[in-house]
Length: 135
Image (tube, rainbow, N blue to C red):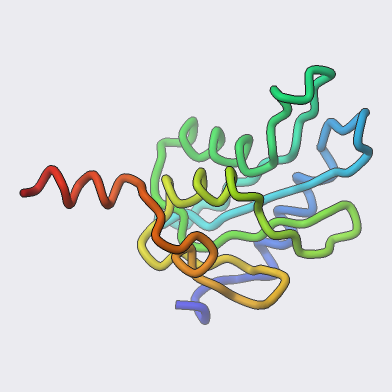
């Protein structure tokens, strides 16, 4: 599956999104991009707020674009900082990605390409609910 992912295109989409980040407080822009199972690329940036608790991570705005664009499942993901360096999603964002991931979704991480199950082991999400409800 890795060979079917244009990682460079994902990094460029993440970098382009990062340049639109609203970061007046931290001055730390972040961009995220993912390949959807229908071939689209969705992206997002972090959007800060003076009330820090309502700040949106780049993964949140990316997921909003996914849903607003018709949904689908994420198959590959990249996140970058203002210098274009790879970032690892925080725990909250890993759960958000898991919720919308295709089984085996790939993430470009600081330690190489990993699956969503490797970066969020033993996760709970829609697949587990489907398995339970199928009984």
